[in-house]
Image (cartoon, rainbow, N blue to C red; front, side, top):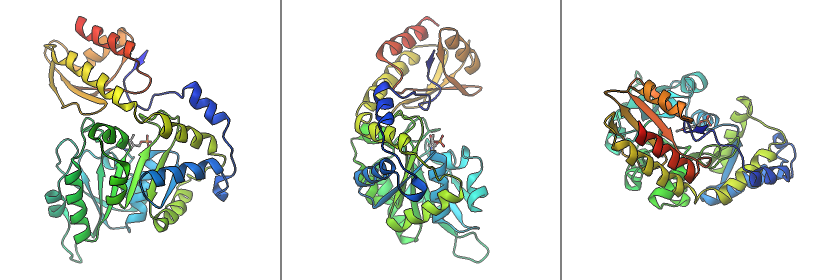
Length: 337
Ligand SMILES: *Cc1c(COP(=O)(O)O)cnc(C)c1O
């Protein structure tokens, strides 16, 4: 099977497994796992941030960040498609007791003007706005990337209104590669950044939350309270170090493959609007003689798994386990439909 349902389906390569097998480990709840400590230090240095904390999932890193940035009863500003709101089990309300101001962005991206309008007046009867969270690249926005100038403009609004500024960077490396940006640019503007190692970077498990020493110290306590304190996690952290050293530049291949497949889709009469393809995600409308479920089934019969995300839309996500040869097969299958 060729699996295009998500970039989380990758399996560790033998080189990554070898790095994991050789990891030196200790009890990370005591802060004694040398490989976890190394991964946290490498990632923090990469982004020019003071510290990092290794967690089992990107949901956990986001939820910890929201918890540290807010008090119960506060309000969080994000796009209406944001992962933190749509796909984290209601965690903002559940874990932090916060309400959410959803903004109507452009494919998951919001602007400084929208953020400014979304801040509640400082009145006793209003929830206190305390955090703005962005997503880059956007998931439900089809892998779209922010223009960095727009991020800077939002930072300024946060400064003027004393708001925390968090980045859900589950796929930030895809954006960095596509836009030729650096991790340090992002470390400079955000108060906290979450990055996933288990998506395009290909590790089996793990995400990192980055921030100041004070922020990360608080984050460690919240991680423990959320049940995310791991013991000999160095075996997993070793995969993360391997991924940061070997699997970032190659994301450009995934982006090329994505564009090639989107081009094949665009020639078909049953394909309607395809969201602009910027990184490793295709979201396309299926219409006329096929619907999303029908197209998904036809592809599945040819050995290609993908996801119908609504009755009219399908999603394909490219990643490390999809080779050039597989891309040729995907294209020829589409051409025959
Ligand atoms: C995948 C993803 C996450 C984290 O997901 P986990 O499965 O909890 O690791 C967070 N944000 C975005 C935008 C994602 O796509």
